[in-house]
Length: 399
Image 1 (cartoon, rainbow, N blue to C red):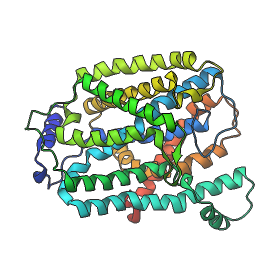
Image 2: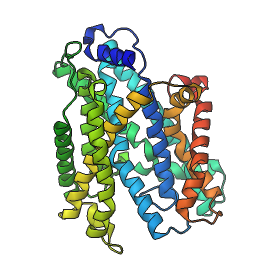
Image 3: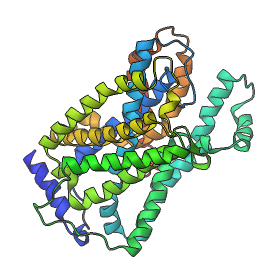
Image 4: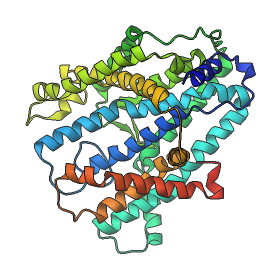
């Protein structure tokens, strides 16, 4: 661990002009990508099995009250941080990549890496998912080719599906290149002097993002989407804030400098926030109340939830970053294979979840139990298929 910390400090302190050679992979970040991709699969699977949220297919089975509360807690914690964490990790590598390649090649690579999978999802994967739904749920009797003109005719932002993340990341990447044309990139701190933000500064950041989120949700509550991009506007403040935080984290060596002591403090915060959530739901919403009161608008519930969400986000990101850096900064064969296939798994996971969930809808169990029993199957099949796609020559250098 000491040698890896030294590598990270050297990387954080290296001048921008010196970033011309390949640097050692930060395996803990690769492993974090595996975790976050798995959580994306499980998040959408939990919605399939009764948790609140929007997804292509929902199993018609039943969910008990306790199970519903636990599933709601699961998706609330996920939603609070996992996509923001994706933006932070993605932008963390942007400065070094830009410095090595320059603006033109950097943008070209972004359009290849992000744009091609986005177009492929819209034109192929989305079509296959909607054909599966049309045949099994809507009585469509035509061929898969016969559906394609109808699919394109009724095209809308929903067809982008989970690729809204790739789409918005591409937009932020373009804005980053424009920013670099007008603003001098900050120099890295001298070797050994990189300091992570204090716990107070991290808390202030989370609180500020929470307040901005609350203000945005006064007019655009949770569930409001910018249709052409399938972009959930009520979560955009966090995504932008985390993207910017990732840029600063790279130059200042924050990920390497975060201490175990800081992580322990934020672990206590995670536990406290988890315990607080059901108390808040009972007191603020009630057992039979309308949960929409927390989605947005001028209510104390919406304010509390927005702040809770962003504090949970920074807490989870700090804890997981330090934990993975200290405990999971290595890979065996399985982890290497999953890491290489993580991006492909994110792209194709609806193509696994929807048909497989429809095939298993006849299994009559409490939906939470069904989720627990079948989650390994869904995750395993997704990564296995993604690994196979990754071996194709045409896909190897893109996903």
